[in-house]
Length: 430
Ligand SMILES: Cc1cc2nc3c(=O)[nH]c(=O)nc-3n(C[C@H](O)[C@H](O)[C@H](O)COP(=O)(O)OP(=O)(O)OC[C@H]3O[C@@H](n4cnc5c(N)ncnc54)[C@H](O)[C@@H]3O)c2cc1C
Image 1: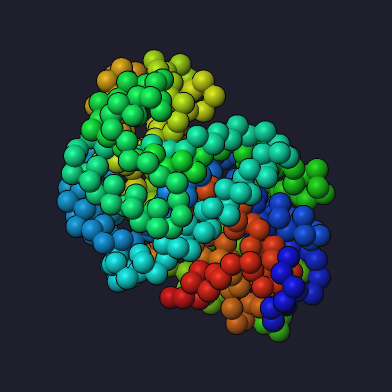
Image 2: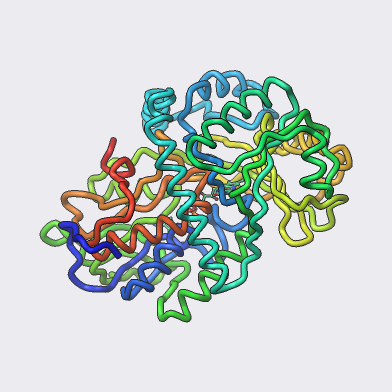
């Protein structure tokens, strides 16, 4: 922990973390390591409901460009009317979603990208270091072979190559690859692409094994995880939260005492923050994954199909395909047209894979918690709730940034200055 201290209320050691997804679990783990007592409350059953279980499992220093970037609005508009495209925006947005869209538009520009790419890269690299450290504590299948950004069209390859140049400026180890070079790097899969970029520091893992390993670790360290407990509000006194008001089933409601509270409720976090008078613009970005347990071919390295925005991850002997970003309501319904879009692009880029191989394969949906500027919310909730902290809004990078989020949050909870300058991540920025 840093030597200097922040003017933050750290009295008492009992931390209640709301949300048992990967962010809440990492916060709990690092808080326990720093000497706090921790209770995690999760409204779903163990392993159910959240976005953290069956995502693409990638650790992505390569993702230093936030979601709010130039060209995204035009691309989104072009894709909106194609039911098989990787992007959709709710056709009936309410006022909160309209405000989110306005804020997104305000940030989708070059100065914004330039202002935050260094920070995103630094956060992802620190998180990668922590993932490596954690893999010595429990095995969750971390593979450190990098990520291939695969391009079907020459034009895409050129634009990805110019992004690779920016990546090098940030100190990342990157190689622009011909088709032949791609085959040398990953002989495990036939690819019908023009070329690609190899981001050598990216990693992949089984995200389910990571979260279940973390849960076991938290329990072994004396932490508590309570399932099917729904945080509904806060009991406040003199500008501080004294307890989280929660219900478990219809029969009982209770007050869970807290010295400090961390809201890590993913796409639902804004509801809780609103109860404290904090505006946390948030949209749920739905995505899907499908896992082939006996794929016809198994790559060694994870990849992203650049045009279709489909992530492909080997998980043990299985192969996971993940994609789409449907900005809208918080429902987990499956849109088969978009699933078809994923299957089509996979069979185009990997000719040994046919669309019919996905028939009957389980479809999983998760809601990414998306802030409008593409940066996480990480820090104190602000006046009126001095002892409450927020950790959410990581969008497509929630797994990748989970360890660094927990690590920095533990510093905040202890009143220490965080190791990195995270002023841009303040939850009160909108
Ligand atoms: C298809 C897909 C692929 C992805 N691939 C990757 C990837 O490769 N790499 C990467 O870094 N990220 C990836 N992501 C994003 C990543 O999965 C998310 O950013 C991350 O899981 C968010 O974690 P979280 O803990 O914030 O939210 P969640 O996992 O959603 O957890 C929040 C939890 O809080 C609980 N909760 C909410 N409100 C309350 C309440 N009031 N009381 C009690 N509990 C509550 C919810 O039930 C939920 O379990 C992907 C996402 C999708 C959809």
